[in-house]
Amino acid sequence: MTQVVTRFPPSPTGSLHVGGARTALFNWLYARRMKGKFILRIEDTDTERSTQASVDAIFEALEWLGLDWDEGPFYQTRRFAVYREHVQKLVDTGHAYYCACRPEEVERMRQAAMAAGGKPKYDGTCRHKNLGAGEGRAVRFKAPLTGTTVLADVVKGSIVFQNDELDDFVICRSDGTPTYNFAVVVDDITMGVNTIIRGDDHVMNTPKQIQLYKAFGVPLPLFGHVPMVLGKDRTRLSKRHGATSVTAYREMGYLPEALINYLVRLGWSHGDQEFFTREELIGLFNLENIGRAAGVFDIEKLSALNADHIKAAPPAALVAPLAPFLREKGIAIEADPRAAKVIASLSARSKTLREMADQAFFYFEEEIRPEPEAARKFLTPETLPLLTAVADALEALAEFSEEALEGVFKGLAEKTGLKLGKIAQPVRVALSGRTASPGIYEIMAIIGRERVIARLRKAADRIAQAG
RNA sequence: GUCCCCAUCGUCUAGCCAGGUCCAGGACACCGGCCUUUCACGCCGGCGACAGGGGUUCAAAUCCCCUUGGGGACGCCA
Image (cartoon, rainbow, N blue to C red; front, top):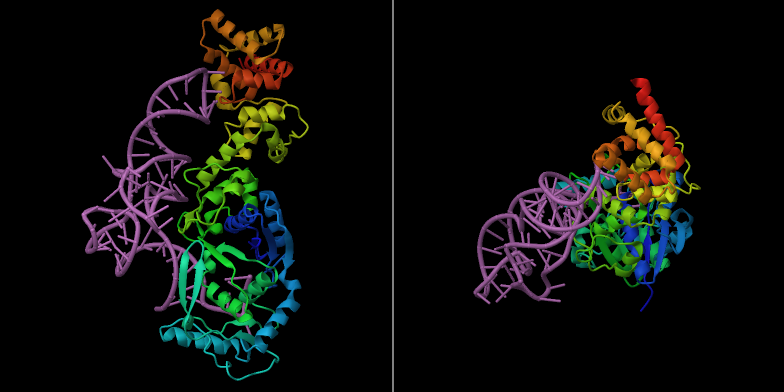
């Protein structure tokens, strides 16, 4: 059994989007599962549109997702000698020929073919001219005119193409650069790639590539075409559907584990299981359970999964990923001993890290500025004595623990005849500035006695001044 | 225009290949309820789908055909 070799070949013409991330993920998972190799290759032959910034963005996204590669990154622009050599090989064996037709002429042929009710194709004018290399001449592949090409696809099954649908496509442009279909095949052959998992927008390229493999006389790789990711309107996911870049999801506060879980689950299944860790995925992923139908990207479900991954993560592991979101608010938590406890108190309440940062803010805030609505409702002359009473009791408390705190509140409730909520809500607003927060004893224990008392007194002062 | 692919709740899907155990299961969302110091979490319940039509069969979500709908591809882009 030979080792599985997969690859991810993005073209650096923009940031890594979720669709691309998913195919990268499938390839990576399959390689890891099969104890194979995963290769990264940058397809930058389109020098007009390729940028270094895009290359960097792709690395950044892949690293964030934790998709590491075993070989590469290879750059196609540095492999022109290899392509030239392979072009020559095909010309020498009669599988390719030079073509002197101008682009305008080819365009006319296409129109003509289309008008005749067929597929736009090159008409083979130079096929038998036996032209040599020359200025302005491209190289075309001599495609079979009859018969069929069969794609044995692992996810879609067998697909049969009529060869007369194919035309003599260009493999080398007149400027000497290789075209996509040619470069991909040469790369995959020379790099030893034997498993190609890619979006099904590539199925129509496959018969051309299969013919190339045959012309080179090498065995075919395993092909698996995975369905596209669609937007809400069921068209190919694009910027009009909102955020599509992987890094945008990081900025919205999604965990890489959650994005991975969501993306894999969109188009692959393992029975009814919804939640997967990275390790589980490596142990379970296979090609057989990839679905055949395209899927709609649903950020709601991503959010739900993100919430699950936040809940499942050890709080301490969330400190680093959460830190940037609080830093935006001027708070540094990396070295703060309270950070893990704060996260623990919030992890069941946050769908994203950004949400968590918003909720965590009050723990670290120097001075609480209660939300006006909350203050109007709970910081009133009637509640002032309660706040003071709690502050006084806390000062006298021997041990500042959640249990002891509970005792204070229960005792006060009994003494005043008030329901617990009547006491807790004003205290909550005084401490957090809001009407909703984690448990009152919990936040008090985290904030600490001194600060709690200070916040309580401060709130009492506010009421006194206002009154 | 030509070619290719796809089709189960609003969405992601299980089931389909090896037809009966499916008046179709799970998840997200939504709606109730419970829990409760708030908000969440959690738990319980509800709503909700085999695109349509023909076959084959004792029996079809599962197999075949057609229709419809959707997606994708047709470059000296990748």
